Each structure stands twice: as structure tokens, then as C-alpha cells.
Length: 496
Ligand code: NAD
Image (cartoon, rainbow, N blue to C red; front, side, top):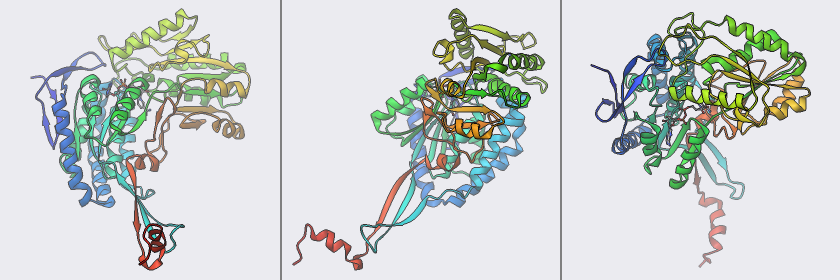
């Protein structure tokens, strides 16, 4: 019988209801069916999370929550190979990337949240207007967080969407992408094994049009934590406005890598390739624009071509394969049409790799270099979310900054130069939440990340990423002996 991936509500997997087929982008094979949850199921999951929040928050402490998170890290670590297999089968990313990057990075992030003591949920204050009185400022949990995740890095995203809110004392209802729910489901099941109470994290499967919409429309959630495309983020924010809900939005990008002629070009060429072709360009911060000093452009492009030729296409489930699949058929169609638009608008395909060794019936797109584009036209501004790099020459530092900041997005950027004064000067002019100097894509759990401009609102990771899931409460301790309240009350109440 075909496997059904259901919802996890109150500690139990439920497989009833409408089903959607789930195929692997590796070779088109059927993985199973996922449930497409209706409004009643979503509301039941939210209710269960509400009850768990009320019970758990009052009876847990930061250290007891961190202990459970630490236990979870151990369990996931023991099953790391299973997670990597599931992740690659479901997304089509290479097994090498899942095994050596996505899964271990996510585990190290779970550990960070289990161990960090850099944040404080409470601080004492005095009130300068009322000498002798004291107060406490608390960062209280939001309550029930609705977490919505995309399909490109499902396990890492699930970790980011679940662990920081739980550390901050919240409960969660998570909806993974209907294309890639497998590792998020495994995580929620492993949370039960680690000892988290049933219902603290519930998972509902389904599409954005159905389940995602029901989740964000509910008035019974307290916050929406959304990661996905900018157009969907805009809809989420509109809906949140109707119910006055806090939102955090991690959205799309069109990030630049700026390469100066004085850079270590051999290192830079690898960094630029890693920046765009990791995960077949399906990363929010993929550096899809190369902004390069004109004097070294031709040499650099030739070097890139040589590296791309040496990368192996093939079955992503084999360890030697370098090039990942495209996770969804819709995404492949979108890349095709954007490339066509670019060529129609006068852009040139400088290079496109042969992908003949990739498995039949899978979803693949060749690593591609595009040149001759005018900033502001076609794919220069649109997020492609595929293995496509657009290249622009520059002649001055000012021009490089203008090009780098010249899109509606502002997620990340890379600067490649040996002149660190110049790098620092430019970094502080770049409108982006993360700037790497002579590196790309190296994520740290201690470093907050998120977007400027239309790349989002709020931050994930680091202290800021934990505090995102809290709201501030001020508690005022009166001190009658100080006499301050008598002065204040005397404004209204005359002494008798
Ligand atoms: P998407 O916006 O289509 O979907 C994201 C999630 O939202 C999915 O779970 C989807 O089912 C759900 N959804 C869709 N429509 C919805 C609606 N109307 N109401 C509620 N939920 C809805 O994005 P995607 O195609 O899954 O992911 C790719 C996008 O995610 C890219 O734009 C990428 O840049 C972005 N992304 C951003 C970050 C970041 O940290 N900034 C990280 C990863 C991916």
C-alpha cells in the first residue's frame, strides 16, 4: 500500500482526508501521498497547541526547555543519515549536500539553541520619574505561533521555525511545504521521543491555497512566522493586518556577489559558483547576480566555465553527483519562462551545461551564465530561484554599489577584494541583512539573518531570532514608602 503522510496533532499521526501525490524530483518516482488539511483540522491543531502552551509554559523553565532541545539534538544526530536520505529524495538536492551540509548544520543550530545563554527574557529597571520604585521588563512568549515553511531547505527551515519559538516559551503549529514535508514530520515525531509534551508542536500538511490560508486566517493564533516568496509574504501580511497578528517574514532575494580585480580570483571564482549553484540556485540568498570589475570579467567567466564543466551531473542520490535537481515542476517551468524572457529581451546565454547524465523523469535545469543584461530589465530584477547567474560589469566602486542595491530585494551580498578597508566601506553601504566578505553562504546560528527592503521583516537566528518570538511586558513594583504615588494621585485626589 502507498505510504500516506498525515498530520501530527496532539502526538498522533492522522492520515484521514483528501490526499495529494508526492513525487521525487530525482526520478519522478512516487514517494506517497500527503494529506491536504481542511479548516476544521487546522483549528483543531491550533486548539491543541493552545492547550499545550497554557500547560507547558507555566511549568517549564528556560533550562528545562533547553534540556529537551539538547536531547532532540542527540536523537536527530543518531538518525542523521535517515534525515539526509529523506531530504535528498524529497527535494532532489545532492546526498552530499544533505549529508555534509543541510542536516549537520541544522543539528548544530538545534545545539546552539540548547546551549546559548546570551539572551535574557527578563531585566530589572528603575523608573527615573519615580525614585524608589522598581520594575521588571519581561519578554513573554507570543502564545501559539503559526509557522509556514518553503520547500528549498525543508529540514533547516523546520528547525528554525520550531526550536526558537519553543525556547522562547511558545507552542507552534507548523505547515511545511506540501512538496517537502518529510523531514519536518520526522522532526516533530522526534520531539515526542525527546520528551516534549504532545501538542506543543503540531504539524498540518497541505497546500498554501488551502491549509496555509486556513492557518493564517485563524483568529486563534498569536503570531505568523512565514518563510517563502515575496508575493506570498505580502498576502500573509495583508491577512495578519485583518486580525492584528505579529508577523515575521523571511522572503525572496536577488543577492549580488561583487568581485574586484584585486580579489584572490581563484578563491572568488569558487565562492561565486558556490554562491549560486549550491542547491541548484534554490536558496533565498543564492547570489544570482555577479557584479564584476570589467578588467577581469572575461578571464573570470572563462574560469567559471571551466569549473562548471568539471562538475558532475547525474543521480543526486549518488555521492559523486555535484548538481542538484529542481525540486518542483512548477519551479522548472518558471525558470524556463524567465530565461526565454531574458533572451527575448536581448540577454545572451554565455554558457549552459549539458545535463544528459541526469536521471530520466527527474526535474533538472542546467547551470547557466547569462550576460548582456540591462539592470532593471527581465530577470535582472526577478528572483529566478534556479541555477542561473546573471553577470554585470562595473568600472567604479560607486557603480558597483549602485548595481548591488539596484533591486527591490535586500537579503544578502558578497564582496571579494584583498582591500579590507574597501570591503568594510562597501559592506556598510549595502542594503542587505547579511554581507559576507571573501565568503558566501556560511550561516551561523549566532548571527541574526533576514531581509532589508522586500526581502522581509524580522530576523531569524541569534539573540534577535529568539526575541522575535516574544512580546514585552513591563511589571511595575509600587513603593508607597517612596511617597511618589501620593504626589501623582494628589493631582486627582485632594488630601482629606
Ligand atoms: P511560497 O511563497 O510559494 O510558499 C511558502 C509557503 O507558504 C509554503 O508552505 C506554501 O504552501 C505556503 N503558502 C503559499 N501560499 C500561501 C497563502 N496564500 N497563505 C498561506 N500560506 C501559503 O514559496 P516557496 O516556493 O515554497 O519557496 C521559495 C521562496 O521562499 C523563494 O522566494 C525563496 O527566496 C524564499 N525563501 C526565503 C528564505 C529566507 O530566509 N528569506 C528562506 C528560504 C526560502
